[in-house]
Amino acid sequence: MVVSTLKTYLITPEVTLSYFQTLPSILESFSPDYAMYRSANRAFAKDFALLCRARNITCFINSQGFDDKALDSVLPYFDGIHLKSSAFFLIKHFSSQCMVGFSAHTPQEVQDALQNGAHYAMLSPIFATPNKGTPLGVHILQTLDSHTLSRTFALGGIDTPLKVKQLAKIHNLYGFASIRYFLGEK
Image (tube, rainbow, N blue to C red; front, top):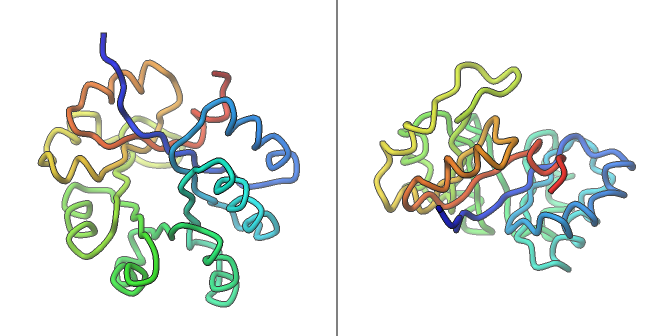
């Protein structure tokens, strides 16, 4: 039996009042190590960060959907910022201020992001997921060296415990991130 040491990373769907009201029970049930606010709805961003920090969950804000002024007003409440691949040029800027995560879609993007100051990278899509193109497959993770894997989260289509077990077999993989996995029942 594989004992999972994978770190878990909750990513929010679009945040509504209903979702935010259920978030404490989701956090209680799954106890993620990390959480990302990935929503254009800015109304709950600060409260999300405070909720995570009260539970010792390292929290990030996804820069997508926030203009500079809005981002500046909420970033201090978060441990870090998560950048999409089109914002690669901002890694060095933010890494001097806070932790930086990065969305990558190839092993080379993972390596480039980490070498340029990102604290972690998410490689996706690993499994099939709606509207995300052809999955890379679990085998793509095995092309990364041990040090790179130790700072990489698998992302994309991770919605069942069986898929998590598959990922747990990848030696040195840091963890997995998901939206749908954390919407299910534990």
